[in-house]
Image (cartoon, rainbow, N blue to C red):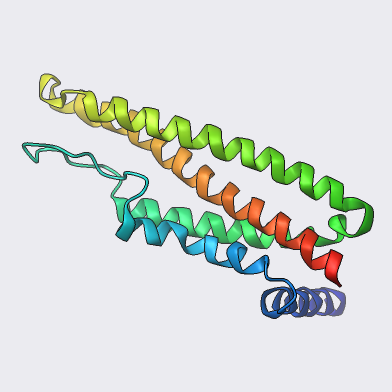
Length: 172
């Protein structure tokens, strides 16, 4: 139990040093990226709601729930990536850059998937469906939209954290 407490104290000390270090300017985008989904509520760069003319579109998963889920997953991505910081010291720098490149590829695929699913979802005329099938059809589209949106932002956070860690350990 004592080892566990010392290990957590070391993690928190390293994490605060990583966040507050002036030399690790790359860590700032990694920390801020956790809040990018919240900014999307104001800027709306990635659409969360359908633009319906008649206003009869009712979402099963609200944009606020999507934002909260995405911020939570981004925070977990930041902490889990930082917890593997020992792997990225010295020789592991190439491994971190490789993992960042993979995450960048996943970001692009998730963004394309989200935008395409959103376009299909917006083009469906839901008035043609009866009530029970309507719920399942909306759920059929909204769950993959939630997953693609969450994957996009959590991998963005992971990529920025990996890049910040390589810079942080290169300068220290």
